[in-house]
Amino acid sequence: MVAARLAFLRTYLDAFDQFLPQTIENAFQKADGSRSSLEQSQYLAVYGVLRERHVELRQRLHDSMDKLLNRSLQTAYSTFRPAFAGSGQEGALSLVEISVFEGELQLVAFTDRFRNEAAEQLRDLNIRIALLFGQDDIKEREVPFRPYLVSRSLADASENMGLPNELAQVLTQLLATSMESTIDGIYASVNAFFAQNGVAAELPLRIKKSLNKTASAKPAYPKDQESTVTDGKDATPSPAHYRHSTQSDVNKITNRNASTTASEQSVEQFLQTIKT
Image (cartoon, rainbow, N blue to C red; front, side):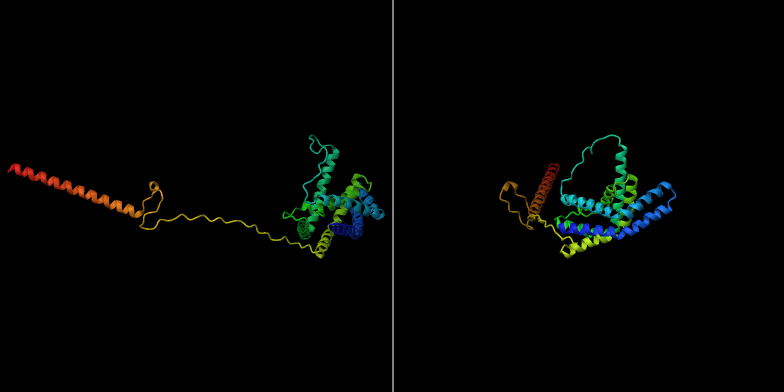
């Protein structure tokens, strides 16, 4: 990861060298096309910074990204996340806090634009980083080279130039707009570095084995035979036994009916004898 870190930082600074001339041109065009004197003066001031202090700006970009990479490598796929003092305090936001919040929203917007420009390269990079850390669950926020670091580095470098807040924001916007054209190439270079070192952008297929428990079949009673049970009290009659019992009951009822009929005939004969 140390070598990958150096490769990413070098590619990041090379991208700045590549888009710097276009950024200077964009600042001048913004100033020339502005209808507001205040806005025009801001773009002209940033134009001068880009032309005269670009070496210092490059160093600021290096320092800010270097610091961010150190921290991101320490916390990648780690449960440790430092908490900020006073983050849980309630109450109305101050003007400074509102400004910071708006700045964060701007960074989120820059990050989304970078992510869209380099979607395919980021997907492969996220897989490679997850493999290096032995993770199955891919999370972009755990990747040390995620797009948010680029957005944050641009903003931090602009703020560290000692410019007023308004000018620092204008400089950050110009840098972020220019970075969009090179962000895909940055991540393509990092992916190429990992590929050359044998880290593929493919997650291994892992099949979880599960034991299939087969239910034991219940013993079936043989047809027309009584079931064999060790305990006579719990013996269950077979279907043949039921048929045999039913036939016996029918015979008994028939015999009783026959006896009743014979008795009735004997009584009638006795009455006839008396009459005669």
